[in-house]
Length: 64
Image (cartoon, rainbow, N blue to C red):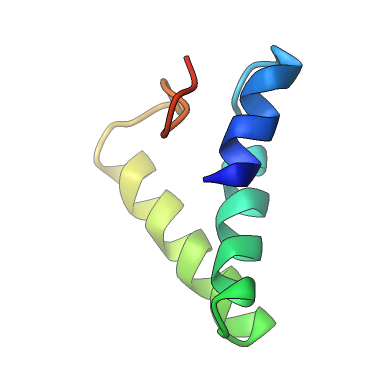
Protein backbone atom coordinates (compact mmCIF):
# COMPACT_ATOMS: atom_id res chain seq x y z
CA UNK A 1 0.00 0.00 0.00
CA UNK A 2 2.84 2.41 0.84
CA UNK A 3 4.47 1.88 -2.54
CA UNK A 4 1.22 2.59 -4.40
CA UNK A 5 0.63 5.73 -2.34
CA UNK A 6 4.18 6.89 -3.03
CA UNK A 7 3.73 6.22 -6.73
CA UNK A 8 0.40 8.06 -6.77
CA UNK A 9 2.15 11.12 -5.37
CA UNK A 10 4.43 11.24 -8.44
CA UNK A 11 1.49 11.95 -10.73
CA UNK A 12 2.87 9.52 -13.32
CA UNK A 13 0.74 7.08 -15.28
CA UNK A 14 0.54 3.61 -13.78
CA UNK A 15 2.03 0.96 -16.10
CA UNK A 16 2.26 -2.81 -15.99
CA UNK A 17 6.00 -2.41 -15.32
CA UNK A 18 5.29 -0.27 -12.25
CA UNK A 19 2.63 -2.68 -11.02
CA UNK A 20 5.06 -5.55 -11.51
CA UNK A 21 7.78 -3.83 -9.50
CA UNK A 22 5.48 -2.80 -6.66
CA UNK A 23 3.76 -6.18 -6.39
CA UNK A 24 7.01 -8.15 -6.65
CA UNK A 25 8.62 -6.06 -3.92
CA UNK A 26 5.57 -6.51 -1.70
CA UNK A 27 5.71 -10.29 -2.06
CA UNK A 28 9.44 -10.32 -1.32
CA UNK A 29 8.92 -8.17 1.78
CA UNK A 30 6.24 -10.68 2.80
CA UNK A 31 8.81 -13.46 2.70
CA UNK A 32 8.50 -14.91 -0.80
CA UNK A 33 11.65 -15.81 -2.71
CA UNK A 34 12.51 -13.28 -5.42
CA UNK A 35 12.16 -15.71 -8.33
CA UNK A 36 8.81 -16.99 -7.06
CA UNK A 37 7.57 -13.45 -6.51
CA UNK A 38 8.50 -12.44 -10.05
CA UNK A 39 6.85 -15.54 -11.50
CA UNK A 40 3.68 -14.99 -9.49
CA UNK A 41 3.34 -11.37 -10.56
CA UNK A 42 4.17 -12.14 -14.17
CA UNK A 43 1.48 -14.83 -14.24
CA UNK A 44 -1.08 -12.52 -12.63
CA UNK A 45 -0.42 -9.71 -15.10
CA UNK A 46 -0.48 -12.16 -18.01
CA UNK A 47 -3.86 -13.43 -16.84
CA UNK A 48 -5.20 -9.90 -16.61
CA UNK A 49 -4.00 -9.11 -20.12
CA UNK A 50 -5.51 -12.33 -21.48
CA UNK A 51 -8.79 -11.36 -19.82
CA UNK A 52 -8.82 -8.15 -21.83
CA UNK A 53 -7.31 -5.72 -19.35
CA UNK A 54 -5.09 -3.57 -21.56
CA UNK A 55 -3.49 -1.45 -18.85
CA UNK A 56 -3.80 -0.71 -15.16
CA UNK A 57 -6.59 1.81 -14.78
CA UNK A 58 -6.50 2.73 -11.12
CA UNK A 59 -3.96 2.87 -8.32
CA UNK A 60 -5.21 0.79 -5.40
CA UNK A 61 -5.45 2.30 -1.94
CA UNK A 62 -6.04 5.95 -2.45
CA UNK A 63 -4.59 6.62 -5.86
CA UNK A 64 -6.31 7.76 -9.02
